Length: 319
Image (cartoon, rainbow, N blue to C red; front, side):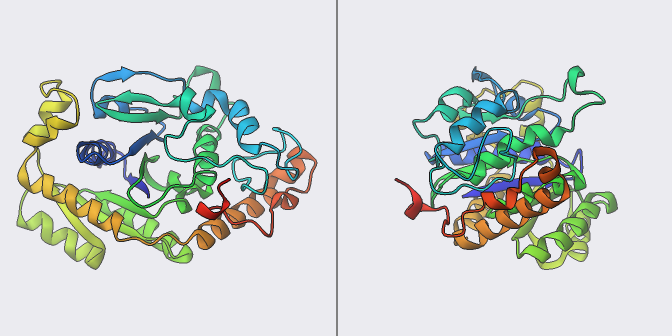
């Protein structure tokens, strides 16, 4: 199951991504956290780094070579763009599987397996878009065959930046983290309107709620989309200051209300039924959009031909 955390910068989405990932890991569930934010802070939020791994964005070419496999519709790595969907001959991935991508790029922080896209560094200034790094995450999710009880948690870019690629359609549920302020819920309205066009499931998670007035404000602003909320957390502040031991078991001292909110999030994820056909149709739609907009001209190929009309990813497509 694929979970995205989005929200206004400073809303606490990275903190919630880390808390939810640690909550899953503490239960023994297989979980992979991915830092897809331009500000790469998820590892720090998870806890002490136990094993580091190279960023996905630095090895995009080798990831493309591996994923395209023997797919005859993809003529080269240069012709494979971030939206290129898998087809017959492509290599599909299982979560944390025994493959080249996971072996190279999965580190570990706070007891949670972690992939990172990489920072926007000085060499990128003025010449690159951060979403080129996120292309590795989009390709990864496009070739991933995950099932119930397996979790991929992605900390997304802040605000409306999340819509700059088709990545926002790759999730089973998107948790929008909102503070109880007008600015805090402004991103919610943008996300809701875009998500409705694609039939995507969005739930609002209130954060930094200090009392009934805050909760009433959120209910008035987002209505039934408000799934749950977290209250001000001394535990989180202590963790951010390095006064909480690392590892999933540290969550045992999280405030009861906030711990229950994490359980509500998991129940919402587990209640989702994956429609592989619809997921693939979204992928194809955004691939064709990118092909027409810029990729055909850049590659000199008709990238619509990369779509395998008789292929749908999912368990049945695994070798």
